[in-house]
Image (tube, rainbow, N blue to C red; front, side, top):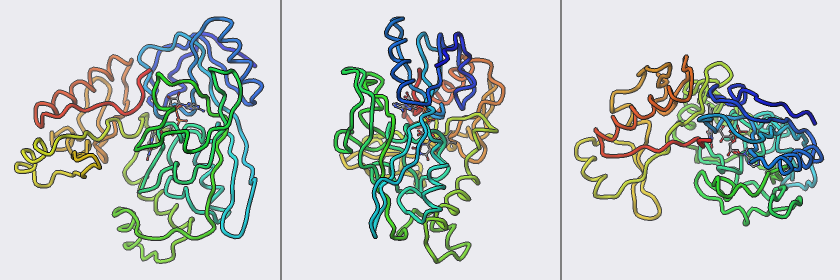
Length: 338
Ligand SMILES: Cc1cc2nc3c(=O)[nH]c(=O)nc-3n(C[C@H](O)[C@H](O)[C@H](O)COP(=O)(O)OP(=O)(O)OC[C@H]3O[C@@H](n4cnc5c(N)ncnc54)[C@H](O)[C@@H]3O)c2cc1C
């Protein structure tokens, strides 16, 4: 285990911003993870587990130990005629896993193709795309419990999964470090109905045979046409959550904006598309402070040449103020601010 000190977090976040981590270590085994935790305890330092850094924004560095997850592994632990159960190391790059399962003819995560980051981070915000969520195929996960200082198994029902949320998401609940996830994937091909934009792509390309591979290919094509590659263009995907507003508020706005993208929520409110609000506020393509709003997707903020978090914070505030002035809605940031 090699602990580095005063490491720039810029290289560990896909937004390519951040101050210094007081200490940082990359761990590839469970033993190294235990050692790193002991080291942080001994030095009375807070811990932060990091995967690919594609869903975090560092405001001013981290005054503690950042543990970067490199725990590998891919093992088929059970199989029958209908399904395969696979245990995956939490540090595996997520899309490598999707590719591998798709090549094995397994269905269940093909719609989650090309989501950046690690396998172990997927349960944190219950990652989802094109109508699929990791919670649907997750059986259990192995964690290091910082309260009991032991490795433990949590079952899906222990994780309180909901839309983009779980017990792991809240910073107050940083009790668990996920070390592996176990998924049950199906040997049956994916079935329609598919999300509108996916179905549109399939129809346009006359794809009528639905296999994990044809759906993965379609998802990759649709995503790459709309989202920037964080390896080339620093960003963290969707920057704002889709806001939820009251029916009265929505009705008032809808009279003025009948094309407003929206969905009813289970608790009687209305969710509106944050990207639509930003676009209607005339901000698509807007650039300032070294940041810009991606031309092909108004929900994505790109770091062009921002020098620090302060640049991003000023830019974010301008967007929030404009959307608030136009629609009376206050946007909230989606990636965790650390
Ligand atoms: C271009 C782009 C597109 C995206 N598209 C989607 C999408 O379609 N759907 C979607 O849901 N998300 C999407 N995201 C967001 C992001 O990729 C996912 O949330 C991803 O799962 C984050 O993985 P990561 O390894 O980078 O996590 P990180 O950013 O490193 O960490 C995110 C959070 O998880 C915690 N964490 C990470 N690993 C562990 C662990 N092993 N144990 C405990 N806690 C941990 C961290 O402490 C932090 O709180 C997108 C991001 C980008 C840049």
